[in-house]
Amino acid sequence: MSGPRAQAGSIRRVSGPIVEAVGMASAQAYEVVRVGPQALIGEVIKLAGDVATIQVYEYTGGLRPGDGVQRTGAALSLVLAPGLLGSIFDGIQRPLSMLAEQTGAFLKPGVVADALDVARKWRFVPRVRPDQELRAGEAFGVVQETRAIEHRLLVPPGVEGKVSTVEPEGEYAITDVLCVMDGEAGPAELTMIQRWPVRRPRPFRRRRASTQVLVTGQRVIDTFFPIARGGTAAVPGDFGTGKTILQHQFAKWSDADVVVYVGCGERGNEMTDILRSFPELEDPHTGRSLMERTVLIANTSNMPVAAREVSIYTGITIAEYYRDMGYAVALMADSTSRWAEALREASSRLEEMPAEEGFPAYLAARLAQFYERAGLVETLGGDEGSITVVGAVSPPGGDFSEPVTQHTTRFVRCFWALDPDLAHARHYPAISWLDSYSEYVGDVADWWARFNPDWSAQREEMMNLLAEEDRLQQIVRLVGPDVLPDAQRLVLLVADMFKTGFLQQDAGDEVDTYCAPRKQELLLKGFVDFLRGTRRIIAQGAPIARVRQLPIIQDLLRARSVIPNDDEEALDGLLGRLADQLDELAREYS
Image 1 (cartoon, one colour):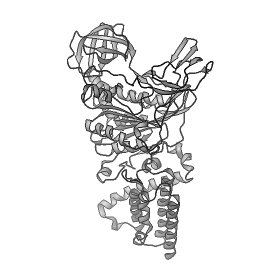
Image 2: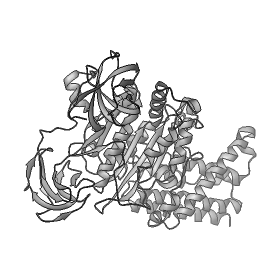
Image 3: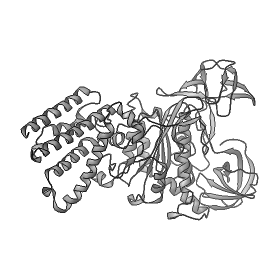
């Protein structure tokens, strides 16, 4: 966003974050400008003759007609280089920790700072030699950004040629020239920095179909509503349904290499809790701080509305940058509802014709543009990288029929609906097994079959059980459970056991907070075996009361928090005791 500035025009009208300026005939769409005496950061979003409509990313109080507007000649772009991981930015990549040192707790209008520390030295290790041919996307060197992540310095898109010179291994700043390439367009000097416009997707060779689960360690997700690596998911839920804890668990335990969290328009106290808690989370893969592989982007609800709108583009651009290095990236946007509200406010200031519930008619198109930047791809350098996007949605009153939720479902393949009734009952994760779905089940079936060839059938059997239990509960609420035959009372019993012993998961429990795929498969098998075995025994004439007396029931319920992930012997022993007790009971009524 830096660069030469020249007086281009003057303000004609100010309406909240929207400014109209005249004398802007030479401006370009999406060009960054500096507005008013405080040089507020803005972006041209509309041009009509010599009149430019500008959305300003800062508080516009004090601007008045006649104030000057300066052009920069560049689009809104990010600085992409070592130092991103562990940082906290606002929506336009200003480093909040550095700005806090300059201005205190409240940002002052017009304040600027380098996105990354240009004085810091990084250990550069070259990966090329002179006269070597290089194409876009290939690495010319590496930097160990954190202990968890090696930062691969890539040839920028559109650049290729023969290496003329390359610096030896040593300590360098991100602005130092490390490699010079000779190409058809002339010499290209490569530093650690790439600059990229946030609204333009970074290129890749081709998309690939994903057949691998992005393991989250949450049983209700991985087993029942899995998301593939490079997939998209929506998490709609009312206030208090556990979106934040679910995001913490996703960030901490998912097997993604890099995590990008975008707090878009959330309340200040919630964002503060996230900013404080994320640095304290321990990365289970390294034993160090989770921030060593995390980038946080914070835009609270009291920040300027235009910066809220651009924040998710900032997040997805950073995610694409690490994807291009060959990493699996997980991006969480919380929440896209607040982002959509920012679009609505800006649209109203532009006096555009509103669509449903006042949202702009292009809401669906903007959501599609965001989610389509996810995916598993072959990068320009020939590696495999992915971006998995999980967007939280905050529908007013938990109404899933409102426009943001409805449009989001068109562009995602996973829908993890949070149920307030489950949350009020202290059942977490409060993901509704009746309202949620995943279109990746068929794609990842072969991946799960490595652990359990019968995974698809067992999953479907338990899903059918839960649906049957829901239908029976409607009868129970009318006439009570005593009128049901034992076969149906067994459905209620096993469904209740399954909810407690499998679907429910305690994020604060040292053992239960994460469940490995192998443990998930064995627990699922245990409940399926119990259901099948007791159904046969009930059909032989055993009363439901006798089934309830089986000691294995308590063992199944406690297994999730008692048996560690790596203790397969204990899990096999549990299944063995289950089979023995079912056989013994069957012999009593044979």
